[in-house]
Length: 599
Image 1 (cartoon, helix red, strand yellow):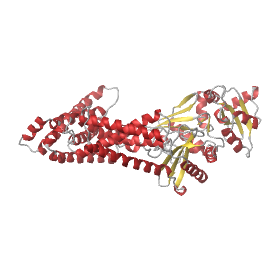
Image 2 (cartoon, one colour):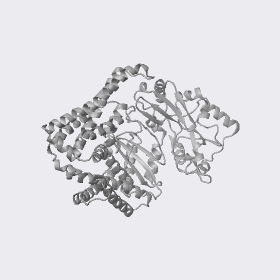
Image 3 (cartoon, helix red, strand yellow):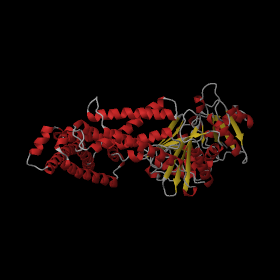
Image 4 (cartoon, one colour):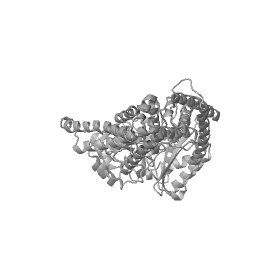
């Protein structure tokens, strides 16, 4: 498909190349044929050059399908033919229209690329610069919910959209919109061709205002690219950013003028210089005001249905490759009013901090994602939080609680288990494939209703859960947490290998067991997440488990005798200990030791 689009662009450039030379243009317009007829003839010729190769390929595929290693039905070939015809017609229409704006084949090629890709490049650079300069910008959401800032434009860039539809299925209303736009551009081509003057053939552009606007937008885009590159290599600071973007503007403007004029020694264009200057002023005003308003917005608590937090310090989860379509809307979101209140308080504290980023300062980041009552999602990420601040520590400790385990459980939150194609249970030491994925998920969900966890979900460096799962659907893929206390999961592990081997408990250098009363659990779990390992061991007078007692505990775990209530806890070395540099102490016990509840 991508090759077909490139073919159509070059086809259009060669088909209308006569209008770029004075002698050819005078000859064509001297013929006793109206311009509308000439354009109609060229358009029909172009469509024939598109349709005939597609038809021949379809016929070859029809007979060749009997000898292929994979199956292609007749309907697949028919759908491919008409969809390819639609895609290439849209590219053809845009290419024809852009050709009547210029009088150079080389610039024509540039303009087609600009029309298709300048919006996504321009917006992408806007978001990247905003993410570099401002606190609160979240370019992507780890929850996978809500359109991230980039996908809105990326997914509607036609070449990308055309290829995505081949994999994800056709979105009818978007297809119709693009088809209507193509027809509009064909009609505009007739209008432009009738108005273009022969004497403009000596100019690169037929309309000076189009040229000036393109120079302005390309100069701003170049400014952002060069400015980003320079600012990444120099220390942070407002002066450095301003200097970087000034250098980027000058460099980009000269390169664009060289490209459009077709010469290294450029001529001064007063109109484009004035237009670029005005565009730059307007751009920075809109950029600064707009992004300041964006990052300072905190939603009303009454309109929030659920909140999700992801942090470098306390929790981690992911739903890569999916848009949330296969998961329940509660997945990764907590609807507890107290958690929502504390999340908005943390959000306000972050907003009241410095608006410009300072990557030199040692601080932690937090991503806050809200699920709103109208079904929309608001995502923000802040890097300016002080790790020791009370709101920061309190809420992240609060959400890392067993009572919210089901919110983060990727298997429990699957909407339609029958659509599951693949399930893999993973840990730091390996993975176990589940053969009957759909049936396994259904059994897992039924068993999960009987489990009421009371132990923190996340632990270790990076704060991942003890176990996770990869779940694959036809067009989506998720990775997320699962519960080690689910008996269905324990049985599946035991069928492949011992639980202690899979969790790497047997290889632990040292183990500790502690019995906790109801009043002691919260304090212990908070200390486990906040204080150093030696301090935790000393405070609770933990003694290492050895000999026969250790063997009994390991055998009990292999028999699946775990307890999610947290009355008796086994603390053992995490694989993450190997990531800690020799001589350095782990910042918290949770980053050196894993914990599981045992009977």
